Length: 136
Image (cartoon, rainbow, N blue to C red):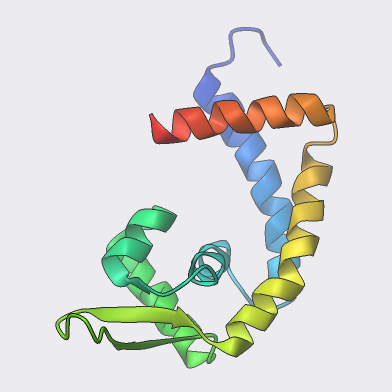
């Protein structure tokens, strides 16, 4: 790789490689990466559609389509927020939680394999740096 390769290109190459590894695992369950991100996020607790979109950084129209597909598969469900009847909350169904639990270790392994060129310390440093950039 040339030393003057733009950071955006390097980040994209790494992200594409890691996403490809994860997508291979998800394909066996007929899930997309966005569907996985939504399911994993909802495993932490119910969210409104706007909060889900913000947390996953998936545009609202796309998030709605993703949730629709997950609802069709009975992996998530929607219901009216008891505290604010104008809001709809999206929840992970037990079936979705079980799928999330079964996939999470395999995905973690795939991500670890994708970062195998780094030592554990380097991988931890990379994570801290990416987290800082992601929140900046």
